[in-house]
Image (cartoon, rainbow, N blue to C red; front, side, top):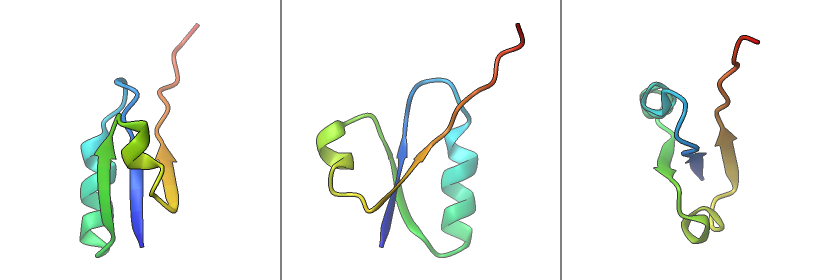
Length: 51
């Protein structure tokens, strides 16, 4: 199973990617919707902003 990580441009996606890699999970970081359409599970990393 391949896990997609959606790159929204605001989070430290490499830490998610390398954590999954250490667990032996095949994953990719992408902004391309067509590429992510083939993914079974998708991570959406959000950044909370202080108001």
